[in-house]
Amino acid sequence: AIQMTQSPSSLSASVGDTVTITCRATQGIRNDLAWYQQKPGEAPKLLIYAASTLQGGVPSRFSGTGSATYFSLTISSLQPEDFATYFCLQDFRYPRTFGQGTKVEIK
Amino acid sequence: DVQVVESGGGLVRRGESLRLSCAASGFTLSGYWMTWFRQAPGKGPEWVGNINRQGTETHYVESVEGRFTITRDNAENSLYLQMNSLTADDTAIYFCARDATECRNSVCYDVHDIWGQGTMVTVSS
Image (cartoon, rainbow over all chains, first blue to last red; front, side):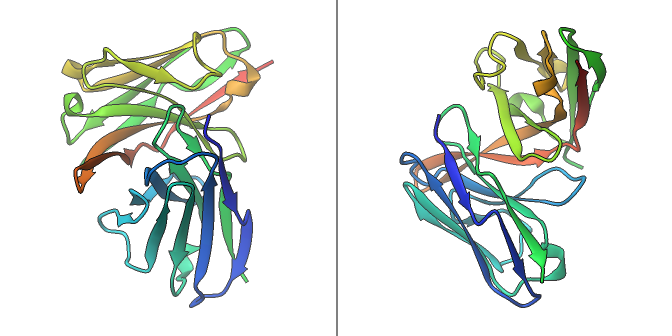
């Protein structure tokens, strides 16, 4: 199975900061990567798919880039509602696999 | 509203079975692949398996292969997850999700765009 290594596992930031989360795949996955946001007690919410395409309704402060084995999610100008856990998911090969998650906390 | 709602979770003993349901509304189920995910307490999500539009093709994560079966009834707009020989490792919230297909530059992607709120399955040992 393709393993997705996500980093950091957690970070502390302030409102207005820019943060970047990365995911590395153990083999090339083209750009078949999505990013999800999850808040406690809720289902994951799709933010970005195809590595860089913003899902409808998602604020433009979220952006994604990458291909093959290296991907990143950047949140510009963090807002209070952005404090959550973020996961990457590869949809290139079965079984689909997630990164371990990054918890974004308020500093 | 476009939504999916899971049901059927509960507390079972090790070795027992459980069948989860996922009711789709606001869209025609037959037009979409569907996926089951799960999330153990305090852990990240895990992909469990998926099923094609007609219900003729399924894929599973190795840990559930041979024990779990995904089926669908498009006429009833419903998706199912039959879980047999349950163990404590299967304790999780189970989510169903719609798989939209989005194409960019002649390449198409699975997009798990609509998720339910999940149903909790607890397996006691």
